[in-house]
Image (cartoon, rainbow, N blue to C red):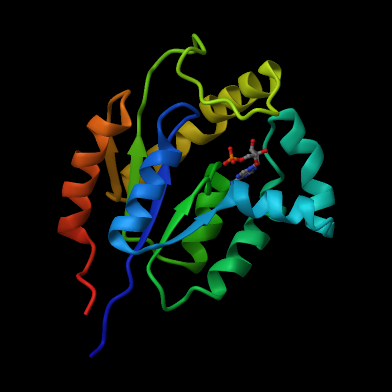
Length: 185
Ligand code: AMP
């Protein structure tokens, strides 16, 4: 039996619950989770060329240069050509989205809109994060990643969910995905 692969992207600003929702999606729908942040941190730990180049950007909360990021992700996706996946944290710029679209088709883009202010109270902060790093990440999201949603909206791939609590957003995401993820045979 030929089964179709399902490929999805999840977008959402810091504090939108993207981490929580992503882990529920991959567990419930048995998708392979590819997180650009995790991938980068592994490269940094392994002191690879890419990791060494990326670390200064990560520490400052800025974005790693597009070409470096695109090469890393496309290389990972090559090994995942026959599995269902959820891409998390990539693309973060329209350039990245275009480079991905040139190589791989996606079926669905989930956008978690989260809370629409920058008071900081809803931010999820990793222990080693400095406040200025968190702010820089939010700014990078606002300036560079928000336009990515327009890119996918124009392609009619965007599915948006608004809310501040993962437990409230999750049932909606789950309901939607159960209509689009092909059942496993
Ligand atoms: P994350 O764990 O997704 O918040 O990513 C942590 C950091 O890795 C970000 O603040 C960026 O510096 C970098 N990063 C992750 N994904 C990307 C991407 N798609 N493009 C550029 N930089 C990225």
